[in-house]
Image (cartoon, rainbow, N blue to C red; front, side):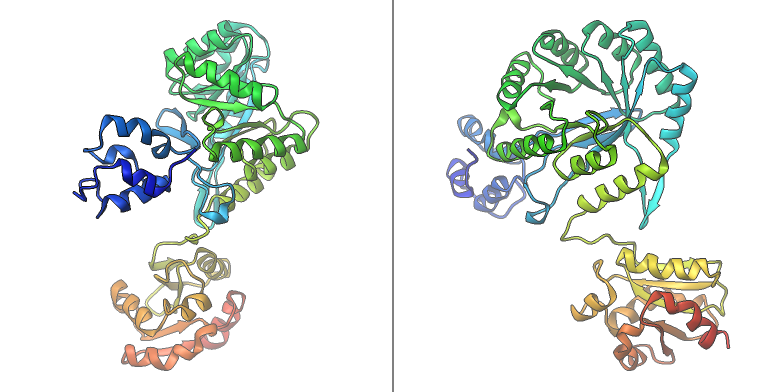
Length: 444
């Protein structure tokens, strides 16, 4: 079981030397208990205490990293069952499965399409994380050629899928970076463990039922493989939800044999692939393998993943500053709003899509929307005035007029006091009203 902060404190030197970066040993102990610090930060802890504190210092779910040619995807290090308790840290990797029975030209073409796919969502570029290559042919040479074809046009991390160690070896020889080996089972785990250990790559372990899975994990660990991914072989939606929820609960209770990310195969057992993938993203996959890829199907999954894995205590923000939209001129309007991403893109999209040249002034409101920031004292006349001065927008325009959101019309008088010589116009309450407002008020 995990140790409490006070239990950890009793095992520390209790000198309050601050060498760990925290003001007291008790503060450091509390961070260790919350999985927010590493035991290695304390240079004075005894070897005996280190052994006792190992469980408390380690995150309940091991961090697994796949990489290739400078790109990487991480899964694990989660510390809670529900996002609202704290946050989820590492988004599950989304992989598209290709098979070595496809022609090499088709593999190259599909890999290139997967590599090139990118979509912008509230200022974030969302992409597919990698490709899973399955040795459907069961032929080492064919598998090696397929992996080579995929990696020639896509430099993303790989999952190599085969239960035959000889075939896996051929795929590994053709792969770059650190792929995930899928998978070790009750009959091949020794050979697969040797391959994973030699490559220093993570190994997926497949088992029927959690008891069998945990037992097999212990054998693989004893063989020297530390980086493991779990597959409980649950494919139906209800079975998957039950198995992964149990795995997460047990991992958080420090059942180390189940303290690893889980892999999901969304398109198997006749499932609706998108529904199964959405469930896997929410509960509690580390890697999700899809059998089909179209921009229309992958986009909602990427957005869902982004929303679930956004820290609920830290809204998505854009960088404060002055944004130029549609090549504004000195006589173009100056509009101000907060740096909450949805607010920014609502305003920016209305301005851009209607061809309005404008200077968009974004104030740092700690990622809050207009009304929320105003109520919290984060978006007031003083903050707007400071943003005007910091961005030097006055030097870019030939007028002294600023448009504030209609929802904070109450700030107009205060802002005129903060910005002597400036005229404050109260704009529409909603972004959709901006084009009509500009036409009626600014362009008249």
